[in-house]
Image: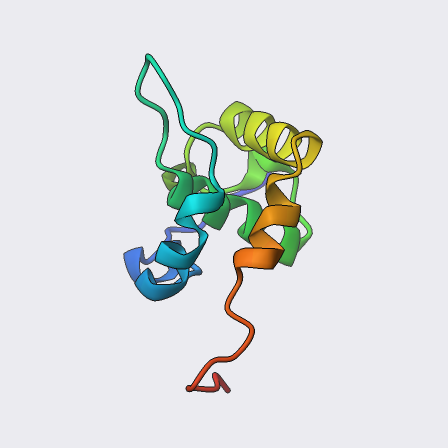
Length: 97
């Protein structure tokens, strides 16, 4: 059994507000039932890829593991990640250590 660690809210989002605003136009519009926040899901996808985890092992703060899978699959199949790379800021004024 994998023990899930508590997640600090400041660690939950990997992207700053500015970068998320630049990526916002890349996300598909949704209709109908409210979805789990794209920022949370993208943070979850980054978290599982960065740490080499299964989606089931991601902290629940990122949303249901099935949602992480569905968005990753859908965004990959529909070229959303390719669009994000175009929208991603190429030049940043501050460098992170």
